[in-house]
Image 1: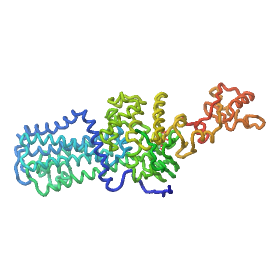
Image 2: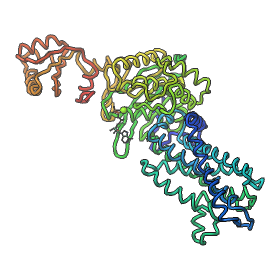
Image 3: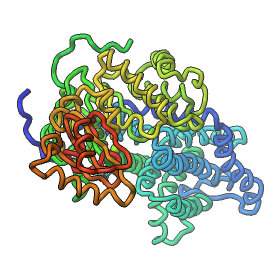
Length: 276
Length: 327
Ligand SMILES: Nc1ncnc2c1ncn2[C@@H]1O[C@H](COP(=O)(O)OP(=O)(O)OP(=O)(O)O)[C@@H](O)[C@H]1O
Ligand SMILES: [Mg+2]
């Protein structure tokens, strides 16, 4: 064998180029692994679905009576329940995705040491990132799909545009799962998870979920526009009430961008944390 | 099923030149040269912190090389990490079993990570559970298994992809003697089937039993290399006389013996090539242990106990590094 030349450049243990973005296909095995584990813990899945449904009924039955109808930005008037329901739908996708992307990932990273074993196989850190994000968004979407069925049954969907709600909840799950996993790679201990709750609650409350964006003064409106949930909730509202416009595409773009950035960051961080 | 003796190309399984691993300012592996050929059982023998695991992780393509070159199965880990890992079996120092899955699921899911079909992985998993004598625990959770069982399961898992080379980082550390022998027996069978074994250990008996060739590693460097027999021949005498004294007497007695051996008129000088004074005993290296004991007696040395034994890798290590292997 010829004497190889010394390469002082920083080295990679994962293949270059495209595979650094889209992985090697190993992600699906990780999804399968998680599905095996959750087969035994179906109760967790049920409770995650029920939470936003409870919210919806509480608001639909109670608050709606007091508030009456709401005018959408385009001038259409809908019942308050029809206004809030798509936001609850977005929130269910968010909650479902964030749980696995944060607590789930942290547990596997620090306690189960799952990835030490996984990365000794052909599976790469990018695969792990894609796999865990996919799993989290699947869980988020599962909640949301059941939620859409509930909305349909109780007559809260008034437009055929609503068939697009399905891909949009998946996209919502993707964006939040990717942001969640990226943040989790920076967590040092369980205490750090207080920050997640600290951020997630105001996002849930103030993302034009319970009242329209126009309620806020101009300057605050821009703050609300920074919330990923605002884009998801607004987009879903446009779909379920049939008020879609060119602006809807902006919401899609924002969610896609957040998801992609989160995923790339997660892959990089996992590589840095695990391949030392 | 596990046969590896088919005549694939004769390129070395591992080639490392000036291999370096640094963590910040700390150099864990300090420029080592290693070559391992197909079918060989190769060992890294060294004390805690010698850099064994750091080296194994680089070979396993889960730790980037800081400097030097490394080729594993003919490929560069920096470029073809995933491809190399596909053909390796890895038993890490700490078990990394999946505690959320059952014993059998651990094997199936691991096989899936290698891209095996569900059917393939299940069949292979069954064979391997039998191989490591865990078939009765197939549906058990991982947590309640004993340390030895977990280790065996980790070994079974490492074989799921029918690897060309097995990397074992301290395969039997922490196991009781019986469990160790079971593991050794399985590794020996794999070796007979032609699987290339690379292992680290700080047990000299393990190294002597399993390794065709080994390197003695200390503080990130390789101190010597060879077969166990050759290392003992090159770096030690045929026999060792171990003397034990009353607790606080060891050091003074040791000094006295060292002085005796220095005296030109005594036969001890010709008999003993080296004296090591350890905290708990004094070692005299000699090709004729019994004659040495007789001469010591004649010179008036009266230890509490005397043991004449063959040299081992432990002695090689002491000679090379001035330290005991197990501290
Ligand atoms: N990730 C890391 N960051 C910083 N230092 C490290 C890291 N991994 C290992 N080291 C250091 O490198 C040195 C060599 O460690 P290594 O684990 O390779 O030794 P070893 O020969 O396997 O020892 P042992 O027999 O205890 O397993 C040690 O001093 C260790 O503290
Ligand atoms: Mg080690």
